[in-house]
Length: 246
Image 1 (tube, rainbow, N blue to C red):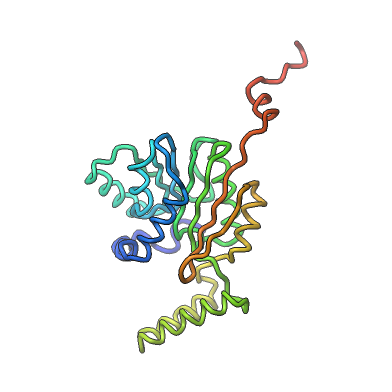
Image 2 (spheres, one colour):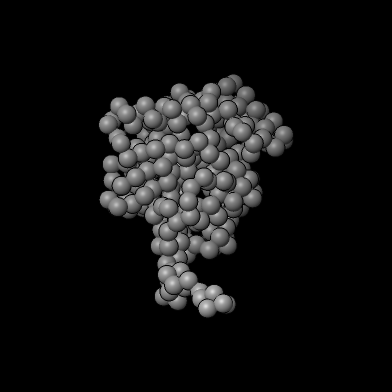
């Protein structure tokens, strides 16, 4: 993904309307519940948009870093934080695959409906970055659409439900189906991954306690944590190895 191919700067108002809807508010509440924010947490919100998650977490944590590729989204988030008197939130314009954050600088990483804009290789890079910035024992909670265009039972059901919902909208729905088909043919459709793929990616990136919770429609939440340091690893980091010349 180079720059902002989805032109999020032009979609701020449309996204705010979607994020204010009941389905996304339910997703926010469940993500926060699973994240179990603590007063001393330093949280990073990947693909923060206009702050659906970041603003909710700011009231319950020591600091929130809201990361997004769209400067207009982040400007709207800054304004919302100022209006609410929130002082422990900072915004950061960045690609999720290359986070300009220090190693082990966060205790909690969250995300909501951002990862499906990355291909699987991009997801793996972003998850590697999330693990890098998490301290040992740090938690990861990611909500996204999790399915694929396959004949698997759940995937088939979700696709048929989406098509039926669009058809109920009449000509506008048919037009959207055709547009989505064109985007798919051109390789420009969103790239969600199945729950099983998420579990495999997280384990391959060195996370533990991995589980995926299926939600309504196509949404699911992946929960994992960076392993705690072993006592041996902790000693190795605390005591530098002696030099050969000592």
